[in-house]
Length: 203
Image (cartoon, rainbow, N blue to C red):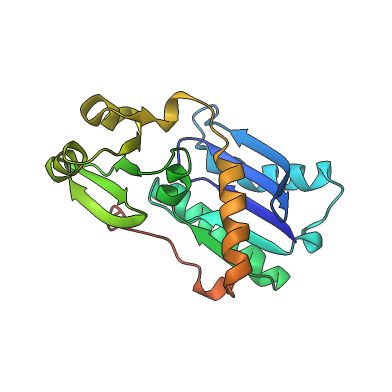
């Protein structure tokens, strides 16, 4: 199974091509010249396919990050994933940012990402809790021995490891999680939806 996986929800863009559980190519793209990295999604996908002597028709499935994260990035991911999957008549699977980042830790890992308004998007014990008040997150972490994965902003308050301080293989993790989910689920592209834990900003 050839899987194209991509993520524009976090601070970098990841585009990964995998065959089953084996990574063929993985690209990381950052913001450039005041352009948000998602602007380069289509061109990066084309380059990744070309490097592997493949065409879109060779793709068997798509995996994408559905959020939480940048609203612009979430829209870009899900729109491109749904459009490609519809055109190619292939399955598409959505994985959350929190599930991806959880894989950076060992057992007993929690994930907290800045959700603004004194809240964090919070995953604990493998379950997405939603946007939780920071005080509640602090109490939960204080009373339990969790390994915390977070971002630069919340690391200052919560401690833990910020995923933004190293170049972690998040695209590879997304591709492998997609493969596992595709093996056990039908994953129709029509059912792929953005994970907006909080409503998008107006305007």
